[in-house]
Image (cartoon, rainbow, N blue to C red; front, side, top):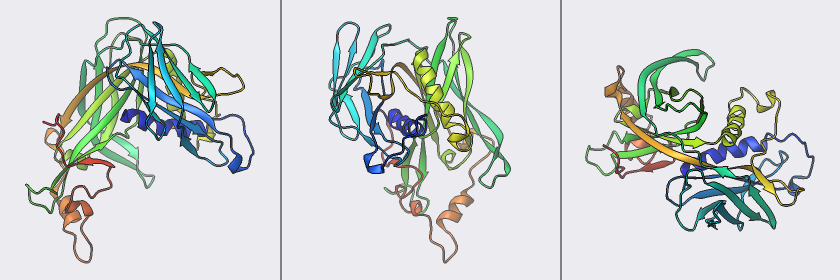
Length: 348
């Protein structure tokens, strides 16, 4: 299942709920349900995934997955790729497949008797990631007490070497995995070491008009994750121009300061068209090319360290305080929901 799709769906649903221009005053139990789609296929041969759900109006501020729909993807050669309902709104292709360069694809959905089809989407082959690096850095930011504070950390950087002078559009997602140790356990204890993965870092959009670039992606504060080692996986998707402008609208609203109503709201319509013009479906179906890169680092690559005194304070606090739960079992933590005792196959 595409974890990036799950993360971006959460952002997308929130924005669609709060970006409607029309105001509808209704009883919450009678709120109309507007279907929406969030998904894409890429150029990798694997099981593809699409999410379908319902939006309701601001009056009851809920959304829910759409089940029982008929979903398929077709191409301009007449090939049809049916999808199956996996529950919770996720539909996956029955057979693995991947989009091909310069081929055109459409998403077809039949939901509650209403038929919706996406506009034609063509796979534009993006360039492979040339380099994925980090640099030691520091920035001044407003902290939780609304005071200006200096933060040390790293800035992740991506580079692409492209000599072709034409527009390229990209979206980046960063996946962080790091080691957490149960400080009160012996080194070789079953409960000592876990691997935690965080997929919630913001996505980054970029438009390349120069034929290659080097881009600062994200600043990451120095913290616990650097103590024993941290991996950053960069997932790059090459977009077409329609997809780029759609996700730029989503990103612009998600990063607006204060209330989202402080800027003039606009409708994020997407590219789904109904056979019955009185119906509507929100969201976007895209066809993207994928490229990945990974780097590893730790405090030993940097000029600052994570002091053991922090572990001592958390795991051996003075009475009457109790140690943090993770100190005796690394799985007992709320740092992230995705955690395992099993060392990933790609971990050095």
